[in-house]
Image 1 (cartoon, rainbow, N blue to C red):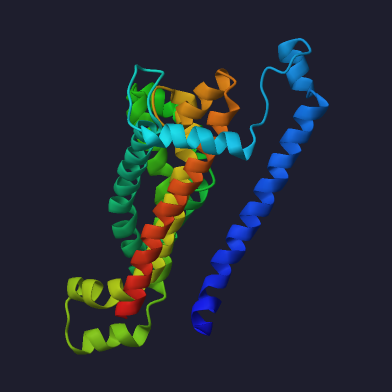
Image 2 (spheres, helix red, strand yellow; image 1 turned 90 degrees about the horizontal axis):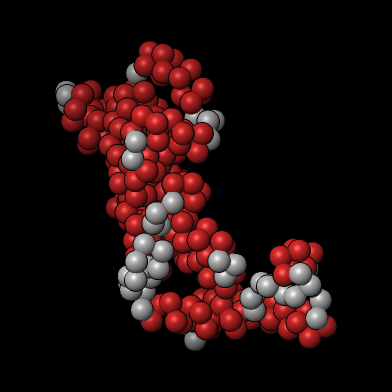
Length: 277
């Protein structure tokens, strides 16, 4: 019984913190409304009358219930459900992330196993890695001439570096005596790579993948704000243009929830790998 209570304490504390913060937020909004205070932006936009304001948690919850009760409705280009918008964004992230993994992990193996390749490619990596992914968007739009593919390309660019570097680091730090044992048993380079190096480097590779998926999910929101059309980033920008801040806050929360779930999937994979070891 005591162990059960101890295991529930973090969850209970999380709920209490959420309730306290939500209560403070709700009270602050209600106090502002009751005193009739206007922000400078509201006075500018509404000529002295409130035209929009930060919603209270109760409003966000009511809106969330409405949106999540029918998340896949489609009433035209500018009126799609939150499920459809998130689906577009998740699809772009997964395509760009998968393409990056197909290149970054094998190339990371090569870099990690060959000091010559590491020294040769490292200058290119160090120059390209700090470039903001969104800086590639104008060039991608000009060359590809398709906003959907350009957004996927930006996800590819931002996802490749953490996976590439973590894979190379994991391969380089495999214990040398394990590799020597493989050589003693006259294993080929391919068998050594798949049976010895890959299992040993897997936790580091998965760490790089977790970092990459987090960055990709951050970047897709900004990319979709630029290219428009569909996706959660476009949804936020469209609702902002409509001054519907309740929808904006709701979509921010949904972005956080989906990001947490994507990270949880890779975290579970990392734990399974560690458990098998």
